Amino acid sequence: MFRSFGPNEVLYIVSAVQWTLLLSAIAFAGGAVGGMAIALARVSTTKPLRYAALAFIRVFQGTPLLMQLFLVYFGLSIMGVGINLWVAAAAALTLHASAYLGEIWRGCIEAVPSGQSEASYALGLKYRDRMRYVVLPQAAKISVAPTVGFLVQLIKATSLTSIIGFVELTRAGQIINNATFQPLTVFSLVAAVYFILCWPLSMWARHLEGRFAVATTR
Amino acid sequence: MSNAVPENTDAAVVMRDVDKWYDSYHALTSINLTVARGEKIVVCGPSGSGKSTLIRCINQLETIRSGTITVDGIELTAGGDNVDKIRREVGMVFQQFNLFPHMTVLENCMLAPIKVRGVSKAEAEQTARRYLERVRIPEQAEKYPAQLSGGQQQRVAIARALCMNPKIMLFDEPTSALDPEMVNEVLDTMIDLAREGMTMLVVTHEMGFARKVADRVIFMDKGEIVEIGEPESFFSNPQNERTKTFLGQIAH
Image (cartoon, rainbow over all chains, first blue to last red; front, side):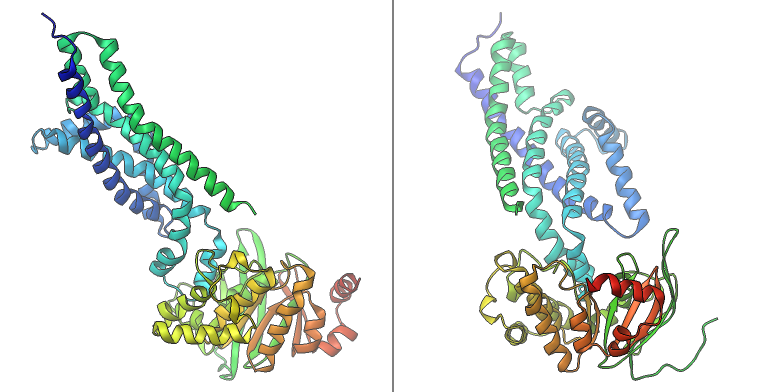
């Protein structure tokens, strides 16, 4: 009565990787925009802005991603938006990524020596020009490695959306497992696909880190 | 209770009863100082005496708690929006150069004129090359700061500040981070600038430089201006005990 685990099942699982990738891409893009806003708010001279960003980060770093997914998922349906798995998954992961990227990038902005901002002030550069031409380009260089590192975390985190029923790699594995009942084979395959996605990124992040270390030693 | 004495319009900088605190630390205590246009002032004193803080207040890298500072006829008020106007007229050179490491020498010199003064790219480049010529490193224009020696970097920093056509130049220990053999190339550049009539406030321990170009030397200690004098009398006949002690220490 169980389906056998054949090429079709493998194909079903492997092709589900596209949804994992798409969801990761959306969450990363949304998180990049949100994270930039959070990071700038965190280093702002306006106190309420700083505290609001800090509160946002604390909430999202201090609660499990799964609870955030549940809250967004059920929250949206209670608000009458209806149950849309894509919207719920993308929104929750975007908020999550915004908090983490915001905190990572705040650190990178603060790692740019204060003399750079002082020189900008002394030259009369306004906030926008100081950030755009002086501070952010230097912060960006520092941020590449930790940002790629976070992307790896984010790709793996998309697996949690399987719990609200979003069909991506992990959920596809569960579906096949329910039909074939070959958990070890199925989830080994699922894990292997994640590994193939994440391992090169991790290697790349480490390579960038090494290059950055060389660039910053005098 | 600001004393509304009409300001001397010839003054480049007027500081009146300026006080600054870092939390409970009194960094500057009732500073009164008038700098005439074209005047060159050297500020010296032991570390922590407030000399850097003093000149950093002039372009508001440090905010003051009370008193008034008037720069080029523009009064700085706490929280006011005159800061930008003043910064356009006041150039600054830092101990650590603070060049933008991701930009070439030329780009370092062109950024502010384009973004702050709104001059065209071509004009900014022309100005930049002219000042790089003046600080005697025109051939380094396409290089990045890290490819230059400390002395060259500091001369670029001077050129970068000059590209804004400032009326006043502030130097915050411009030679303190340099290897000894590079000190003179930077001092010579500053001497040239002084001869051309620039108003200068220089925090430095280079007493040779002070003797050569300063109109007045200021000695600071514990956040106060202890003594002001012309270099001749300041060095040969200091009045205050603290000045004597300090000069005795750096003479060795």
